[in-house]
Length: 484
Image 1 (cartoon, rainbow, N blue to C red):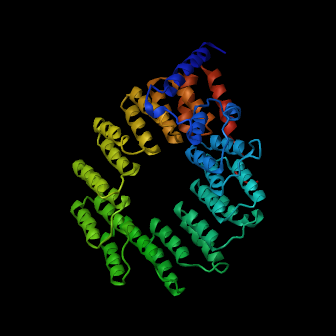
Image 2 (spheres, rainbow, N blue to C red; image 1 turned 30 degrees about the horizontal axis):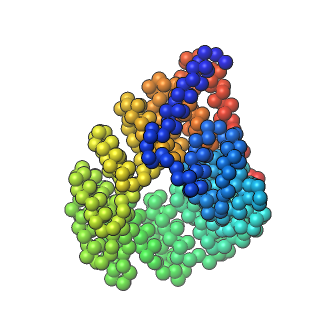
Image 3 (cartoon, rainbow, N blue to C red; image 1 turned 30 degrees about the vertical axis):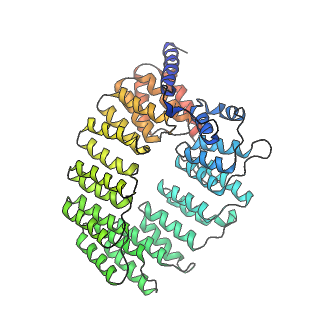
């Protein structure tokens, strides 16, 4: 096997023990009476995917549909682990677990996220046999394909719905158009709309989807053309339509025109929503017009509209843009005073701003304050780990990683990648290999750049045996891309 392989295996044992140790913290304790927590801890701590079914069989835990839902939601970032648990629960002795439609949808989304499309369609086939597939099932698949820039596959999904016992309707048509538009292919969406609008009777939502697509393009003349077509078809704009128009105008720097649209809404008795105000506040913030951002926020309150977390986050962004962090923290205090709980996005805005300004120590202080008041998300952990790695503080990055694992938070592909890249840059090849193997075991395919960086280091150090081992591991994640 070679000296390095033995060294790597020894390093792996130490590294895994370090990352999985509880450190005596109370947060690491799992309530023995909570089957969801017990299952999540068992699944996440299982080092070999091939051993997972055996571990689950010997856990003695009976899984209810409700527990399965919670576990699958927790495994959203680890598609293969989610799938293995899903299949194990379905085939449990004494009848198995009758998964809810929501559980089916969760595992479909998890598999699509890591591009395990054949397994995804296998799950859909099970739904067909159980008679539980619905329009939303195919809407999820269309969105995932479009997000992966697989537009023809998204259209294919719409076209095979009847094969799976689901009749395409206007909601499905709208889902296809929305999937394409949100993935920056409004031209394809418009082409499909022009071909199929006689098959379905477009409603305000249909036109709003196209309006949003052209607004994001951005192509304001085409957006106005679709708006005129909407009116000619007898569809009256609703609050969603107005919101899309305001957002498109703001994104193209036409905030004064957007304000006139809001004024027109009000004159027609259509009260602007918190979303519309959040767009205005955010745009003023981006343009560093902090006085206008604050004035708009106050106008909203005067109009009797209660601010939600989205509007508050826009105001936090505005203050961060002009480097007034004390004001941003006052906004958080005001939120909590009004019963609005800051979410991970609130804190991430501040963290991202501090890191971009090189205020790393302050960012870490904010992170430590955040974890006492809010659950960090994948973006939070990725930002903090990347910050420490870029500043040659890999030991601090590992500290954040260990905390994340103690919280039983499954790292995303991006979180794994930033730490592996950081370890590679530091020359910690053994630890990088351990993490890459863990990433693969969890069913997450490493980006080509990350795998390529580690590959070059292994070849440079004459460690082809380890590279071959990892390449073999990678092969388990390679599946045919689509058609069943």
